[in-house]
Image (cartoon, rainbow, N blue to C red; front, side, top):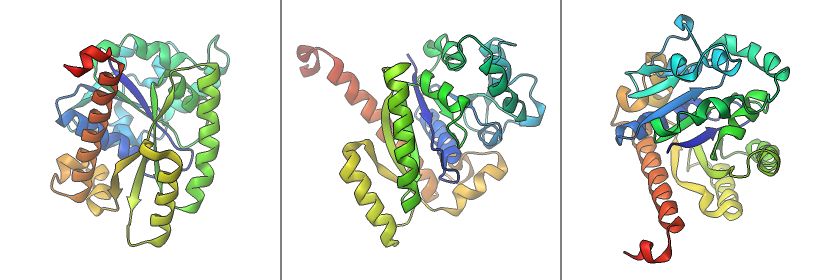
Length: 268
């Protein structure tokens, strides 16, 4: 059964889409079956996977408003080794149309439920705002990965996001939890970066991934070629970091499964 993870942060420019594309490709490199859901009308994750957002017969918009079954809209990404539920500018209209539906917050959850048996991971790239699309992602997700830079304003935005997650967990999706906080564009030479990182670890403990994503030119260049960084330059620091993150995510999931087993089974 697929684990559904929403990558979200209301602050833009924190490496959210970069992390979604590259984590998806890195998980696929470990032989996991991965679906990336692009829930941002900008369609950057779609393009970053080598899928042309301007040439889509169907997109996530059609799925959310009930115009097409979800499987009809999914396309393969040979560049990333995954499948993609793509997005483009049409998605901007979905929020307005969803408001008039009976369950405006549960459209994505209903669409993804039938796909859980087809994948190991479903990653959802959210828009950089707390709107109806992001709420749909949080209602559908099992966990949330929060990419963030280690800077002062990132901490302010994190508080608002935590409130949103808590509210949805208590009213619509009791299984929703913080899967992890991912430090992006990390520069250990910057004293503020080190201090904010220390504060995150002090407050969130092991929810903060040990893996950090460095500032890396190859990471910035890869999307313009429609490739994840492991296909663009697998020896780059960015590629190595996202492969390490995929490994950490898998190890955490495996450890969680062991803890959920009866004690006598876990000992064997």
